[in-house]
Image (cartoon, rainbow, N blue to C red; front, top):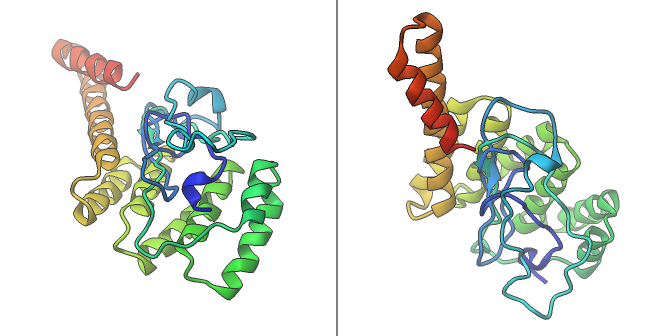
Length: 235
């Protein structure tokens, strides 16, 4: 069983980080799921993500049972978290870990993952899955640390960069989010999720700049109009 078959669901456009932006989170599969969101950083809010549903990881596997799907738990209104394609060194997700996630026993799943990683610390799928669970439980800093370690040890994988960007966007650190998306695209220039997320980040940065111009000079009618256009794009 691969990560693509785990019972996760990411209600964002087509990638993941329970952020309301539009960035993506990684689950090794042929499909993608986004993770970042837009607008000012909001507290964790599942409802903010519902409008941007990702394709279910089961959609290409009609025989899979779609039960106990985990919902994203970060809300950053404009970037998408991504389900990533399987990395080069494909590792199976043990059935007991899959079952624990399906049963929503996330602490048990993390415990089982930790045990597996003791024997095989370079199992990139399990480590990425661990970061996904950390995000689901609101452990943003822990997920960030896990993803940073993945980028250092597996720099050839674009998806951890994408999800890190989602986390930084969630924190309102758009310049850092932009840098990680650019790294993801340097590794894989044809990464649609990262491209869309980067466009959303640029749009958010533009909205901020126009807003600042309006603050400094209320007569900036064009800046106000452009700010509204940028904000409308991110809705």
